[in-house]
Structures are given as structure tokens and as C-alpha cells.
Length: 264
Image (cartoon, rainbow, N blue to C red):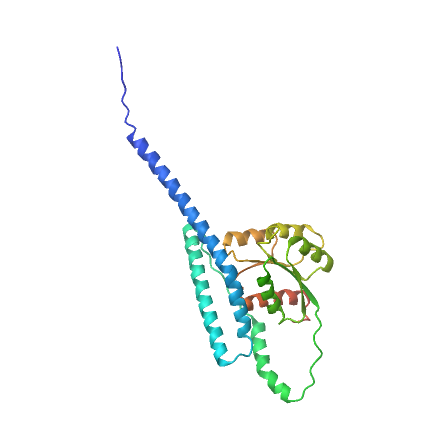
């Protein structure tokens, strides 16, 4: 006597196919998010130099036509930055990690504008100029990109109380940190010989630099990445393109906290 059992597996096959389709869709969505995040980083790096040097030129005494050209560069660059940020917002919405970011107001920049208005009047009053301010603070900048370093060099030229120590790689940066014991360290996340996070951990493990303020700079605006670096010991995290006013405010606050009687 023979018995046969017939079992319909159509539903199981459909379920398996649906699960496979869901996995493929999630993988594709993850790949898209990674691509958008990487493209944001690649676009922010050159935009950092464009907007940074344009902001420095804006602070100079330019002719009206030159000022108009700079205004157009800044307007176009900032519009591009908004578009890049909107792409990152889309990634954040899809991953459920959209966050708000506070903005800083730099009192130092306002005071500099006031000084620029009064300076010509003081010059006509035949006042004897004060001797130049001698650098009293050291800032170590570890950065593998020469254009980014030149930008920070130009920005900090507005702070004569600060001596800039350059390092294009981790090894030299660690040596300068040990030798000069800087008051502040600017550390780029993407170095040619090691990750900025690894160097940050080495700085924090060194008794000489374990308490030195460290500001991380990166074209990666990912919130999770920022939180990782802050948890690893960074004091602050700034994204490129660099906001010059925000950067100077952070430097001023750090220096003034070390010596309240010395204003940058």
C-alpha cells in the first residue's frame, strides 16, 4: 500500500523571495547612503579652501568690483554647501539620525570690525603705536593637505598671540607635541600615515598631552563619527568647509580659558 503527501510550498517560497528582496533593498539603500556620505566628504574638502580663502579676502579692504566678485564666490559656495548638507540630511532621515546643530556668534569678529572703523581716526591723532604683541601661545596643527594648512595659517595670522606649529604627518606631530607642549592641537581626521582617531588616542595616552585641548577637523559631517571622536577624547569637532568666524571663536575661547588675562 502506498501513501503520498502533497504539501504546497508556494507560500514559503513567496516568503523567502520577499525576505531576499528586502535584504537586497536594504543593502542597496546602505550602499547609497555610504556613497552619498563619501561624496559629501570629497566635495567638502575642496570647498573648504574655496570658502576659507574667500572669507579671508572678504575681510581685506577691497575695491567695490573686487568685493562684488568675492560676494558672488561666497554666495555660490555657501549655496553649494547647503545642497551638500541637504544630501546628508536625506541620509540622516533614512537612517533615523537627523540632528540639529547650534551656531556660534563670534564676539571677536565684531570687535575687530569696530577697531577697523576707529583705526584711521587714531592714525590721524598721531598716536604712537604700541610694540608688536609677542606670541605667547602655541598651536599645533597636524594636517596632511597643504592647502588646508595654508588656510589655517592665514586665518591664524589674525591672532598674533599664537605661534603655529605645522606637522604634515603623525610622527612629526607627536614629536612637536612632546617638545613644545602646545596650548591647543588641531588634528585632521584623515592623515596620510594614520587615522586622526588613532593619533588622538596616542595623545591622550601620553602624560605630556593627555590634558591638552584637541580639536578635530574633518570633511565628514556624520553625527555618529563626531560622537565617536568626542568619546575618544576630542574637545571639539569642526567640519569642513571651515566657518572662519566659528573657528576663531573656538580658538579664542580655548586660549582665554588658559589665561583669562590674555585676550587673543
